[in-house]
Image (cartoon, rainbow, N blue to C red; front, side, top):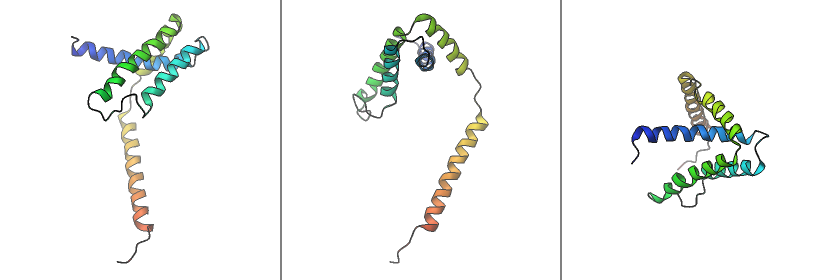
Length: 131
């Protein structure tokens, strides 16, 4: 059985490889069929329509847990090794960029302010009927 640190490393590598596949799909040295598989895997992973719906307990997420990593593995195996190595290096550099907590807070504050403004506008300008 895998230990927690090895599962964490596997997940980190999966995230890096996902970014690397995005970069590889834009590289002209990658064959069209590898790009097609990468796009299909990304579309399946991001699609709200699954083979097994997510609301089914356990089984709903099992297809995502198995099919998406298998698709990523297949797409990686179709990309030439030297291109994949370059893309993994670029992906690691991209993922190591510092994240801005202040930026995140500003975006969340803007969303909250927008929601309040929308609620205020709806409350103020929505026609009311007398009972």
